Image (cartoon, rainbow, N blue to C red):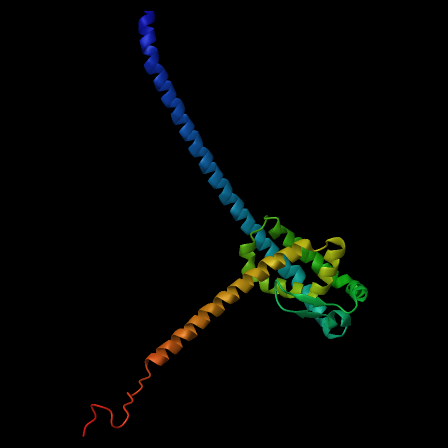
Length: 221
């Protein structure tokens, strides 16, 4: 009896091992499916938050920026207007004639500029931390966002150097400005190649008559 049980134990162990392996494969497949589902959910959530931040930018930043432009046109920010910004990212140069005066000027007019920048910093934080998808927001926000940062850049740099303020704003600015530069460079290359091909085509259509000096062999007598 023991001998029969001994011989039977081999197939039984093999069957158990096969079932265990099958369960492991099923479990691994379930883990993979769960992981993919989690990634999809996370991606959808990041897109949703990106849309929310775009709406927040339109609702909060844009009206305040319009109010700032009005004050600026009325001469309320003379030091900021006198700042010189040359070049483009990542080779921007800012020249500020009166740093302390600029800081005080920014704090004037009920701190409107600080309010704008604080809101932009909160929005930028969502993208830099990866909570919101920066690629989704690039098309609708980048031009306006980078334009405002460039406008306020003299003060932003001072605030960041002094107290590390607006770090997320500068990081997102660098990300989007770099992407814009890359796209513009690519378009310029395509346009240059297109123009070069057009010139090649024009040259191919030009026919130059063969020049044969008088008296050369082969001329008719």
